[in-house]
Amino acid sequence: MRTILILLSSIYLALGMMSCKTQNMFAEEMTNKQYRDGVDSLLLYNPDYQYTIRKDDKITISIWGKDDWSVGSTYGIYNSNEVYGKWLMVDAEGIIEVPKIGSVYVENLTIIDLKKKLKQAMGEWLVNPIVDIKILNKEISLLGEFRDPAVITVDKDRNYLLEMITRVGGFDNYANLEQVKVLRQIGVDTQVINIDLTKKGDYRYRNIPLYPGDIVIATSVKYKTFDKRISTIIPFTSAITAAAIFMKAF
Image 1 (spheres, one colour):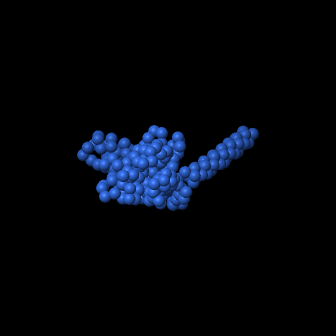
Image 2 (cartoon, helix red, strand yellow; image 1 turned 135 degrees about the vertical axis):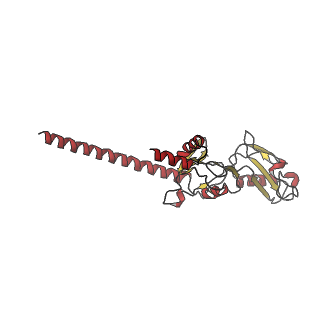
Image 3 (tube, helix red, strand yellow; image 1 turned 180 degrees about the vertical axis):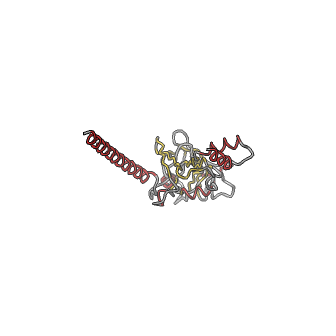
């Protein structure tokens, strides 16, 4: 009788564990699906993406043959870069003051939208005006365990993760390639996603497009702090040698 009770208990326990495992697998599968859907909607290639003007953006306006109407004109004979302050800043109300035209609301407009708006306004004085717009402060930040972390000014609306990593010299020795984080501001929310550059599979989920305003963070591996402490304790040996000494001690 005792043997039968033990056998029944074992079967019941095994079934319970199988049930728990099945539920966990299902939950994990749903989590992965939600994760992948999030990647698809937020970070994969979007052919329709266009940068929209934001408050505090610095804008130059170039009008062919009209230097006195331009601000930081690329058509002018003088250097028009940001060093000389030849730009218009979008104010807290989303407005810039354009010569000849006056106040223009630009927040959330694309470059194409603003060009059309200015051409229409200038049509009162000019026939088929040639207008060019440039945003000077479109930036992508790369922070953390990179060889040369930097805030990089970009001209393109669409850049790619691996391309930007090469521009900061690649990763430092302590970078955790399994936990590269991308932060993207969407409205009032900040979306965060982890990129595992060591994982095999769909290349799109690693070399993702980056847009102006994105922040890429290379996290550090867990043993970085340990290595630094060992280097302090044993200054005449390398961190790797010190770690080897500790491993042998145990």
